[in-house]
Length: 163
Image (tube, rainbow, N blue to C red; front, side):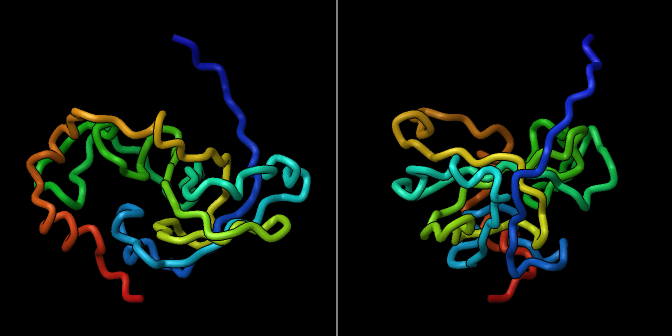
C-alpha cells in the first residue's frame, strides 16, 4: 500500500452565510436560493476563462473544521451506521468535500454562486464544470439512500438553516 504524502494547496476561499456547522443544510439540493461566493487567488484567475458559460460547477474543498475521522457514520437521513465511504460525512480520512452549486456570474476573481451548503471560510481546492452529457446518468442506484423518502430527506436535509 502506498502511503505517499499528498499535498494540496488552497486556490481560494468559499464564503457563505453558514457560520455554524450544525445549521448547514446537508447537501446543495437542500440549500436552494442560498447565496455565496468564491474568491479565487489571483494566481489562478486565468484558469477561470470560459467558466462563466456553465450554469453549474463542482467545488472541491477541505473540511477544515472536521477534526475526527470515522470509518462508520450514522448520517442524518439514517438511523443505521454505514461505512464512511457510503456517506458524505465530513469525518473522512482526507477531509475532502464536493458540492454542485449554481454559478451566477464571475467578476474578476470572485464567483457568485447559489445553492451553497458550505461553511463560511472553507478552503477551496478545485473547481470543475458540471457537464450534463458526462455527469448525468440513467438507471442509477443510490444504495441505502434509495430507502429514504423524498419527504424525510427534505425535512432532515435542511437541518436548522433559516434563510
